[in-house]
Structures are given as C-alpha cells and as structure tokens.
Length: 113
Length: 113
Image (cartoon, rainbow over all chains, first blue to last red; front, side):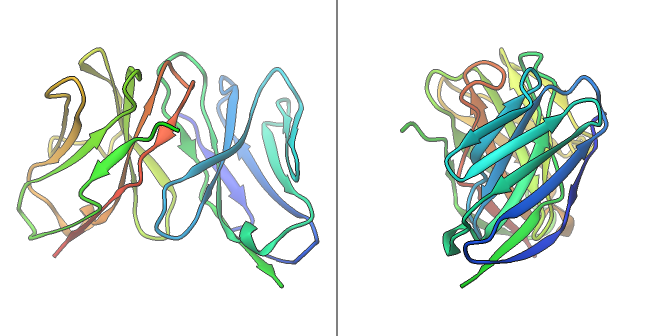
C-alpha cells in the first residue's frame, strides 16, 4: 500500500518568511495529493490539493508543487503569519472513486512573531 | 457550508466497554470513512463504506470494530470491547463521489480508562 513520508517534523519560521514542507510517496498509482491544516483539537481542514496532471498549483500565499517522476510534492507558504501556526499533513491517494487518504506524519509549523 | 457532524465530542469509557461513535455525513454524500488519530500522531485510515457495505478496511480495523448506517442519515463506528490503546480522536469523513467534496467531521475524542 501507499506510504507517505513528511519532513520536517517541526519547523519554526520568522513571521513574513517562507515555509516549505516536503512529502514523498511510494505508490506510483497515487494521483491526488491534498494538504491539510490541523489546529489543536480540531478537524483536518483542506487548504490546497493537486492532481497529477499538473505540476504546480497556487492559491494566494499557498502553493503546492508535484514531481511525479521523483514521487515528491511540497507545500510552500509565503509571507507567513502567526495564524499559519498549526500542524500540516500531506496525503496521497489514487483516485479510483472510493478513496482512503494515506497521511504523512505531520509538520508542526510555528510562526515566530 | 455543509458539515459532517459527530457526537459525542468527547467520550470516556471503561476498558472492556462497548462504545458507539456517531456521525451524520453531508446529506448528498455517498461515501463514508472513519479515521483515527492517536494524540500527537498522524491521521490513520480505518474503513471506507459505500452502498451499505465496507469498501476497504485497514489492519487496524479488526473484529473489535464495526460500522453501520442504521438509517438514511447516521453512520456509526462501534468498538465492542475497548482497550487502552483505542484512546484517540476518531474522525468521520464523507464525500459525494470518491474525492469530491471530501469533508472531515469535528471528531470524537475517545478516552479509555
């Protein structure tokens, strides 16, 4: 089955700087890659996703890049703000119509004011 | 925005007792999922459910676990004889079709004592 590795496990960034979180996956059949933000005690919230037919997707300060050949994808957050502090999870799945998500181990992002 | 609702938000139970966690998926969704998150760890897939039957289950989902859609709106996870290691946050999710509209509920924190 799919295995998703995520790095780093913790990341501290000065407010206004950029943060990058990286994930690798093992199953070449995976073609959907969402990123979730989870605040303490809350549900995972989808912040951005990418499918394998594109290499990059951007939504305001958040972008995701995908390298299907190397089987890795990354989350980029620019101009970080204190409210970006949370745990971020990547996930991967093949899109066959009834999908389980395989999550990475999470990155605790702390924005230092 | 439609939500997946879960009850209770927190449940404390004695080891060996049965618990039922309840979820109300979004009304026009057809695919239902349960995930588990042990404190400080990643979100793990337990089971997916479609057309009144289990589509896929993980190795975590052993004979102690069962799922049911007893009526047109609820989706339940039953743990027959809880163990200390079942203590976790349990998230229900639903989707309209496969990955479309994939939405997590707010979770039930289960504490086994």
